[in-house]
Length: 171
Image 1 (spheres, one colour):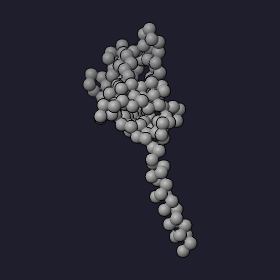
Image 2: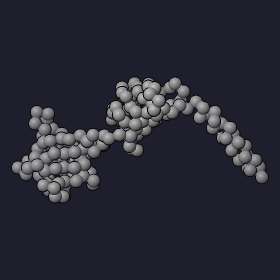
Image 3: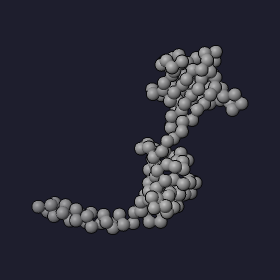
Image 4: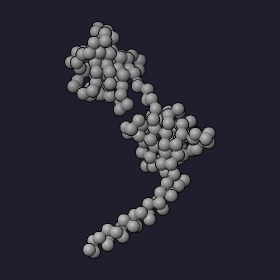
């Protein structure tokens, strides 16, 4: 009987406290106009621009996945959540993240890594995952088909690993 009373009081306190805690929470939504290391500027549907400060505790998600502030581009749709006038605690953004592309000659291939010579730019070490796809002339190949000397084009995934490796020339 006593635990029911305690549970009832706890529920009543949570119900009363939730609006008070939520009242300090500020949610801004809009189209990203600019992003700097210290702030993100959004344009709301009514045309007003809002500058939201960001900081080390800000968590960023892009298209539902963990991301970095630097990956957010103007034109993305975003939502920021913050306490009062403080920095954003969370940013959720939706938009097309361009894939990075590397062109080069295969120097070495391991089970989880490919090393490319990029010409004057030096070398690139790119992680290979179970999801990495290798193609040559439109045909699907396995990772074992990659050999040193091959000319390849690598499309990177958002995490920097190889998403697609296209073999341009064998040697």
